[in-house]
Image 1 (cartoon, helix red, strand yellow):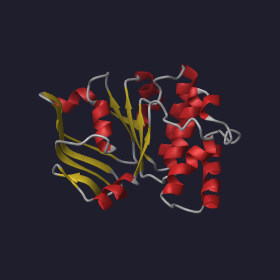
Image 2: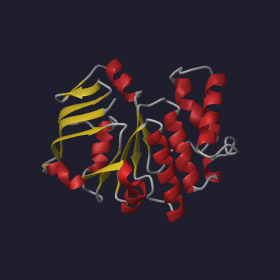
Image 3: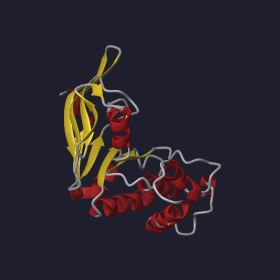
Length: 222
């Protein structure tokens, strides 16, 4: 089980961002791509999540290809790939008009991943795992930043992904909440979830310790 990125390249105009780059994410370690703004790490994450197209190269999860040698697969193959990946956005992207529970149910109901009753049971289990058993009827505006982060993680996990990707998961959080998020990420990795984190936060890297492999975004052009 792994995410494989092979020989990918990306240019914006004449500006080469990533050049013939390879890396792999496995369940054995948390993978952290570390770098400052403008270093290409967000572009890499967007390509992995099919939000940005590669110029060349291949990306696959558990052998399911998104793109091979720069050619994107059929819509059915792309859908199968996207079902294997969950993205926790930097700004959470929770629907403000929906309750926490409704935010968790929306995507799996749309994808017919179970009955409403079955999915409600799963959502409540995930909220309990996230330490939010009493927040299901609240709206996002009633939550702290750390609570929104955990709801966003639970929402991604409702789709049963093979890998969870985090985009700057601690950028708006205080030191105590960063430590809680790090503990939660360690728990998810211990349960066998593949984890990919894009960050500039070296404190988070230190908190994740030996369980993480760190890739410097400066290596994208080497």
